[in-house]
Image (cartoon, rainbow, N blue to C red; front, top):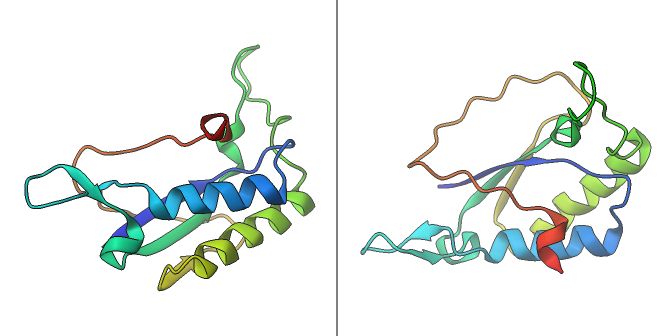
Length: 126
């Protein structure tokens, strides 16, 4: 059991933000207890992570018909912070963390256990 994370790095993200996001993710109580209530974190259940780099999360569709990705970090910065995020989750105690290849075209298949998809943005840290 675990979670699939699609991670986008913005032009404004920093190492400090990456660390805070990792701490938030591994401690979110998003896994159900026997009563069906969100009560357990990824660390509580010994869960695994699949972390996928996804710059397209920063698509701006406010103008025209073609998405702009100008708010996404430059690939060199994004890769550095993405790797820091992966390492931070490991350092915080996630037993198994898997990733794809940064910047590669990938096919990701997942099984969503229940109708739960959560959007976590750096704005929610402050």
